[in-house]
Image 1 (cartoon, rainbow, N blue to C red):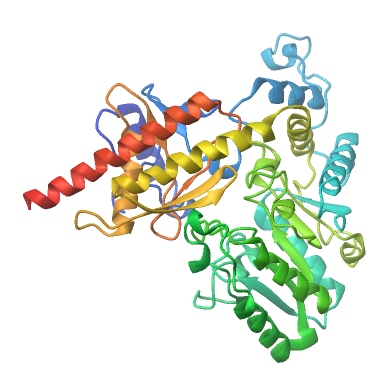
Image 2: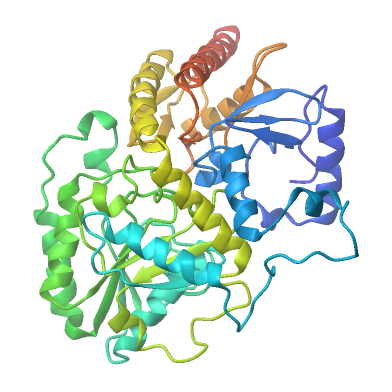
Length: 468
């Protein structure tokens, strides 16, 4: 890319994009055709500097499960931090005010221990969470994944092989990057061996209730055991392939992985960074997929916008790590702890999960109708996380159609709303993951708008072909 992304009639946004282009590398971002500039946000909406309203179909990449800037969450968060109105306005006496510290490295705040106890209690209150009795906090999902892997590898240094599901996404740094992707990626860690994840068998939501033939996966796992035996230490997988194209497998797949791990004393790590706190329709994805992992990795929606992640797992395994081996500057900082507590309060004290079930069916029905436009070939998903796979149309590849749909949705209707989408997963799949607190009316209006955008783009692409 040699110039910044620009759109007509967006002078303020274009100026920001120009500044960004001059001051930051492209590598700092993933490609999104709109590069939306967000001036403010509330609930399920963003606004551009020009004042256009966008439905947020990303939740800031599966983070703002409770919506943007919810008042009740913000009050809880502020109360946990000890912030009073005069603290925020600066109208109190003196240069400083006393409240909870913002940083407590190598010290402890009561709010940290409260967050740890509450999170463990929450996980263990759901079927499948019994093995998770210790928390390793982190600032990002990548770091939490790495800490879970460290703990497993330290348990027995002679067991050095990590199994990971092919085309998964666990992060970009360190061991999290090593277990992401497939064998064909550059700079692979020789300790990581990849196994298959169902895709063809669950490439459309219509196949969700199909019986999965697990024999191919069982055979592959046993071949791994034959080759590596007791060198195999742990197996890490996602509940569904997020970055790999939103493939949501039948429950039988994860049961095969768990049975294999139990039979050979292999640690099972479930990376729920994208899936936790209600996204799959259950509070935790291990409940949805009916398994009991040795470690569950949490992030994104865990703090509803405040950076926080956690690897929660077996105390006997984590105990293999010595002082400092899982520490960093920001782990369990008070801001993150307050955010986790406020988020747990909302999930435990409101009807957000009931609302999620209602919204889920609206989106399943509405997204399936998009197939009639010719723009969308397949729909996958559950709860409030979906992937719509674009089709070839009008002489354009499915990847090109996906890019055009992001732009079309961003620009929206004349004097009306638009939709904020991220760049395509796996080339041609657009993630649909709005906040789980939106109203049914907002859901219906946003789905109708997406349908109109698909119809509009289909007419443009077919018209261009006809004129050519």
